[in-house]
Structures are given as structure tokens and as C-alpha cells.
Amino acid sequence: MNKYDKMVEINKERSDEKVTAARLAIRKLMENGEQISVPQLMKMTGLSRGFFYKNPIIRAEIDQAASRVGMANPRKHILDKAMDDRIGLLMQELAMLKRENDTLKQENEKLKKALAKKSRNIISSL
Image (cartoon, rainbow, N blue to C red):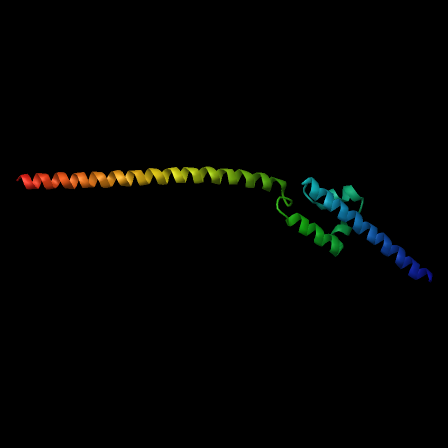
């Protein structure tokens, strides 16, 4: 094996080590529910910003991890929960208003019938 082949092999090993370190850091952030960002990964691994943007394997993993629910923006999870709670309250209010509407419709029908009966009684008494 000549010097060039050995140098290529060493560079490949270093590159694989970097990819492994970056993958572990991404997984750790995901497990902790933290936001996945290049600056955070740089701090955790000591790798350069360019590595994370230029390496297609790692870039794809970052994009995939960031697109998962709640990972792209930690506040999104909190906002989604608040919106779900609000929707639940509005659904309860809607159900209550529908019941009230049905009750009022029934009462309206009774009053219409009573008015029609009273009108017939008045007309028949003439």
C-alpha cells in the first residue's frame, strides 16, 4: 500500500468518525426533546459549521430530525397543546349551544301551536 492509499484510508476513517459523532449528537438532542440546530451540534461535537452543511448524509439527518413533530420548534408543541385545549373547550360550548338551540326550537313550536289554537278559538267564537 502506497502513501496515497494510506492517506485516503485514514481520511475515510476520520470522516466516518465525524459522521458517527454527529449522528450520536443528533440522536441525543432528539431524545432530550431539544431543538436541533447546527450551532448546538457544533458545541456538542467540536465539528465545523461547514461539515454539518456540506455533508449530505448529516444534512439529511438534521433535516429529517428537525421536521419531526415538536423538534423543529419546541414552542410549537406547547402552542399545539394550548390550541387543542382551546378546541376542546369550544367543542363543549358548541354542544351546549346546540342543546339550547334544540330546546328553544321545541318551545317555539309549542308556542306556535298554542297561538294557532288560540286564534282558531277566537275565530270560532265569532
